[in-house]
Length: 132
Ligand SMILES: [Zn+2]
Image 1 (cartoon, rainbow, N blue to C red):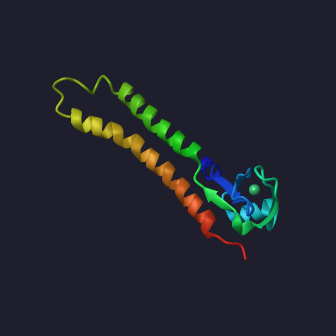
Image 2 (image 1 turned 30 degrees about the vertical axis):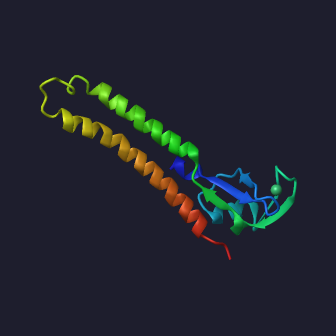
Image 3 (image 1 turned 180 degrees about the horizontal axis):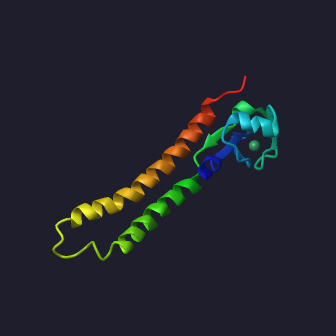
């Protein structure tokens, strides 16, 4: 799944608490170690402190890009389904209008929730898994 690779990886500068972004796309900590080894070296963009941290200090965060993408899917999905079904829905005397509108909102909402849940699960899995 492409969403697996979008979460944000950050590490905190011990000198000033600035979060430094690690630009790697990995699904979990083991993969990150395969890429960069047991420790993370970086120069803090804020205080220029040179930091060497354990890979276990890397934290995953939910990417806002996913949330925005999921939200857009929800909005446009609803609009698109509404447009495609416009000949069937919204007729003045259709007793199923309420049901139809409910269903219309339901499908994109489910997609939205699935995307968000995947992202949360990925973040949790990354953060829970420690390398000894
Ligand atoms: Zn710093």
